[in-house]
Amino acid sequence: CCLKNRWRTCSSPACIMYLDNVHTYNMVSVEAGDEAVLSCPYVSKLSLLMVTWKKKCSTCCLLAYRRDHNETSKLKCSERVMWKYSPDSDPALRIYPVNLGDEGNYTCEVVSSAGNFLFFSYLTVIVRPTVTLTYDKSRVAVCQASAGKPAAEISWIPASNHSTEEEVHHPNGTVTRVSYLGWVNSALPNVTCLVTHPATNQIMSLDLSLCLYTQMPGCVRQLSTAG
Image 1 (tube, helix red, strand yellow):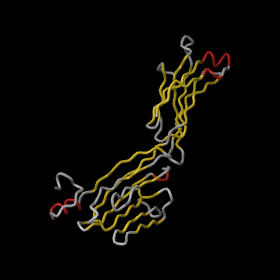
Image 2 (image 1 turned 180 degrees about the vertical axis):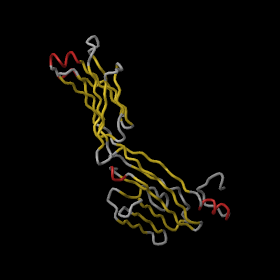
Image 3 (image 1 turned 30 degrees about the horizontal axis):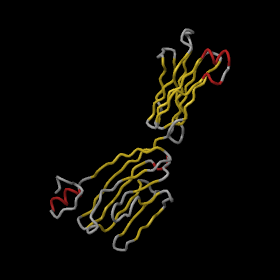
């Protein structure tokens, strides 16, 4: 049974030894504000003694369940951190809503009659950037993806050798990326900014001739948004 299902509790000593030496690493990515669920593989109710979730830091949350007393305990945990289901049947951890401070390493320790098992998860928090497309009278279009995590990618249509880029790293781990495009070809007054990010893809278009000479707000258009 060890080879068929590494998480199944087996009576074979060799299987128990194999399980005790297995450390799994689960990568979870969640957008800020959404729900994060960190799984801890199921252990039979008959063999389960205790389950403990903890984040890797001295002042972080600890969540535990003892089957013999049928009780749960929380230490330094906010109301956002809880069991997803009943811990004696599925000890998954739920965090909702997720924020940037939740990012990091989590450990689920299962104590059972078959042995002790450790399961590791790393939670990555993604932050959707705020995207704007503006212009100025020096004929420069400015495409900005503010406070995203990770940093958004910005490209232009048509592609140009006259674009420059800069980025600002904020203390909370988010990044603002700005791309500047000089308008040097009056025969191509329309430029399109493409912003790609794990949480969103956005396309915005700007009619520079309309923006520069009429100052009409409609010169910048949102063409599409995904995510």
